[in-house]
Image: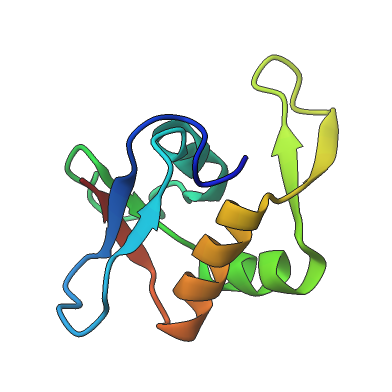
Length: 106
């Protein structure tokens, strides 16, 4: 996916981090964010709509490998490794460079 595909860009902001500039992503990223978000851990509250947790260990893996592991929602025993796109790569580097663990999509 190139930045010029997928409609108008969305703005991804680091929650609680006014010192970090937002990361502009294609509108398709509104669905792609599901690949990068982490479920709530024990005792963690559900986040407001449009906010997502990001696991820092996963960020390191994505930066190192350039690959996402996708698990089928219909069959958890089957997973596929998918190379991240240039836009997604820019996003994971933004996460790593700023030590971000929670984002909001505007």
